[in-house]
Amino acid sequence: MMEPKQVSLEMRDYVISMGAETLNWCMQCGLCTNLCPWRLVPGERSEHFNIRHMQRLGQMGLEGFEAEEILFSCTTCGMCQANCPRGVEIINNVRGMRASIVGAGMAPAALRPILGSAHANGNPWSGPREQRTAWQEGLDVPQFGPDTEYFLFVCCHSCYDPRSTKVAKSLVKLLKAAGVSFGVIGAEESCCGESVRKVGDEELFQKLAAANVELFNRKGVKKIITTSPHCLWTFSNEYKELGGEWEVIHYTRLLSDLVRDGKLAFQPDAGKKIAYHDPCYLGRHSDCYEAPRDLLAAASGEAPRELSRSQQLSLCCGGGGGGIWSEVPKGERFGELRIEDAVAGAAQVLATACPYCLNMLIDACKSLERQDQLEILELSEILAAALK
Figure 1: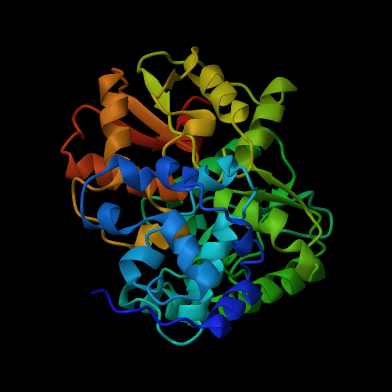
Figure 2: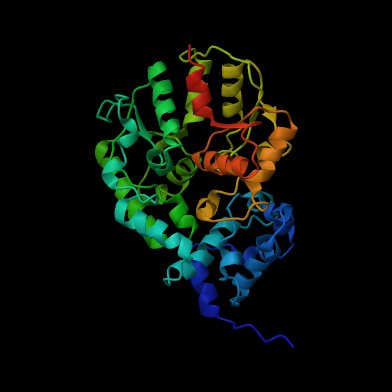
């Protein structure tokens, strides 16, 4: 006989207060579970994680949702939320449940150094604050001033991760080539807090966001270019209530406009067949599908190849919602499905426009030993190499 689960209405109410306002809208239809990318891979996480069941546990205030393999497996890809017939904000519900655990000091062991670094250094990558600008060495990157049109916010990943710094360097080259008035602020910048909030540390998110809002407003920022779709989404959607009223644009949209207006041109090179992976936070979350494809076509001379799951149906790389800091066994990674998809379509390059996706896809390509067949590149790298 199964033992009854402990009911805690106080826990349910606390979860709702931490962002899960739509928790009780769920009618348990199960569509979310059917659409979840965890259904596509084998393994223990796939067996345990059921987003519909997790919503139900939260609704009823039942113990069980706090299990790490359940609560922290969601990558916040948004596939379930985009198709929910009731309009349930499933990601906010997950965030609220996580906040009830992390706020009580019970964050998973893998996340503790990440959150500790964000608290101490203003970034989750254990990089000293003064090293945030190290990627700029030798580039003569302009500083943001009173007459600068755009503030370029380079995400933490592209500031500190050696592979991802190529994204920031390539973008600077592109913006200069187009004559864009832009600048950076530097070491005073802090992480946007998107992943911090998604894993449940609401207090730390508020701290980081408040520091950025004060800094950006003090510097006179009006327009922001982001390298990361995660920063784009957070600045556009979560900072407004904190006083962050700016025009925010992902670099792909800005560069696409510049190409259209004749201010940026490429020397097309159709030497390699390129497929494009839609990042969840650029595509489903921010509805930006055409700009990256238009840019790839301009730089390569032909439209990119489409993966079997693309645009609104794009398959998550696995890096969102804290997934980039989670160790998933070989054979159970979403990114491996993307690699096999690209190889099956005879692509030689798999391009994306998100530093998290770049990292996850490179790791997946290595785990499958496909490096000789497929090169993983961030879109900015392809564009910078194709400049006239």
